Image (cartoon, rainbow, N blue to C red; front, side, top):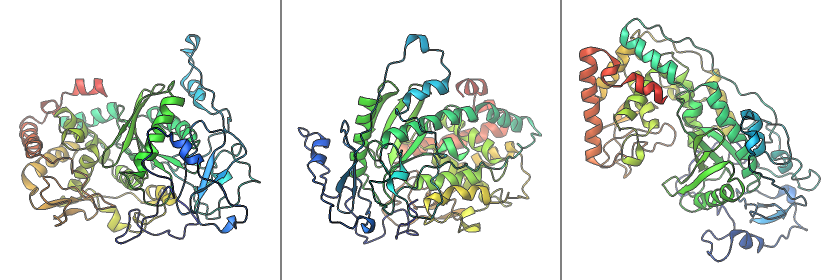
Length: 503
C-alpha cells in the first residue's frame, strides 16, 4: 500500500522477535481524563528547521489532527508534528423539512467538506503507482499546499481517478429440480444489489474525507460481505481504516484511534452518524449507523488481513456459478437457526463462507480448487495492498467436472458437517483445500470448532467457546440434513417467504 516502503514484501502481521515501533512516538496512550487529547498533542513542539526532511524516515508514526484545532498536524520520524498553514473547516446543518424528498445522492453531498473536489478513486483499493508520493497528493490539495510540505516516503498513494475492475459476468446455474430452483430463487431475491453497494460506497467516501481531518494519510476500505460477493440486501457494512503500514496494537493504539474517530462522529457528524459506539473486542471496532443509507457499519483499524481475504473470497465467489447461491442459502439457514452470531458464541458469517468453500474443495470431484496453492503469487500474504484487488480479475474461470445441482450441494454440505467431518481432530482449511490436523498452539487447544484464516492462520471460529453452543450447531446440521433429505423442500429447514421479506 505504501509503494516506497523498504519493508514491502513482509507479512501483514508482526514477525517473531520483531521490535514494534511506538505508533504514536512520544504521545502517551493512556490520556488523563482531565486533559483533552488535543491539548496533549499540542504540547509537542515542532522543531524541524535544520532537518533534512526529504530523507526523514516515516516510521509509521502518525499523530492525529486535534479535533477542533485550527491547524492540522502531521507527524513523521520521532513524532514531531508539522503544522499546516491552512485550516480545514466544517459546516454541518440540520436537514430542513422541505428537503425530505431530495434524491439520495444530493442528500449525501451535505456530508461533504466545503471543498467539493471530485471523488477520486474507487475507495476499496489504493493505486499502483511506484513513484515517490508527497503528502499533498495523498489528501485534498486545498488542505495542504504543495509548496509547503516536502516529499516524504511511505505515504498513502494519492487519490486519483482509477477504475475498479469488476469481476467477470457469470450466468447463474440452471435449476433442474425443485430444491435447486428454491435455492436459486432465494439467491436472486436476497443478493446484494448494485444500489446497496453504492450506498455503502458513498458513505465510505465521505467518512474517509472526514477521518482524514484527524489522520490525513489514512485510507478507509470497504471490506467483508459488502464487497466479497457474498453480501445480501440486509448485510451490514464493514470498514477498515488503514493509518500506517506498521502493525498496530489493537488493545492500545487501535482503541485510541477509534476513540478519536468515535468522538469526531459524535460531535461533528451527529446529523448523519447515529449511535457511534466503541466496542472493546480483541479487534476493537466502532459501530454506528448511517442515517441516510440506514446501513449499520463496523469500523476497525489496520486489520489489513480483512482487505486480503475480501478479495480472496471475491475471487472464489465469481470463480464458479454455484458458489454464491449456495453460500447465501447457508448464511440464511444459519441465521434462521440462531447459529450465525459470534457475539452469542456461534459462527460468524466469515467462518460459514469458509466452511462452504472448504466443502466444495473436498468433494471427490472438487467444485473449487485452492486458489492460494494454484496461484500463489496472486494471493501471497506479503503482496502489497495496492495490488491485492487485481487478483480477482486475472484468475481464469475454473471448469469443474462436478455436475451436482445446487440442491445436491446443499444436502451434501449439511451431511458433510453432520456426519463426516471430524470436529475433534481436524481443522477446516481453504488454503490447503482439505481438512488438516489441528495445530498444538494455544489458540487451537481445547477449541470446539477450528476454521483457519487463509492468510494469518488464526481461528476464525474462536467465538464458539461453549460446549452447549457447539452441540447446538452440530445438532442443527444433523436435523436439517435429515429433514431436507426426506422431503427435498427448502421450506422444511428455512421458511422462504419470511426469509425473502427480511431480505
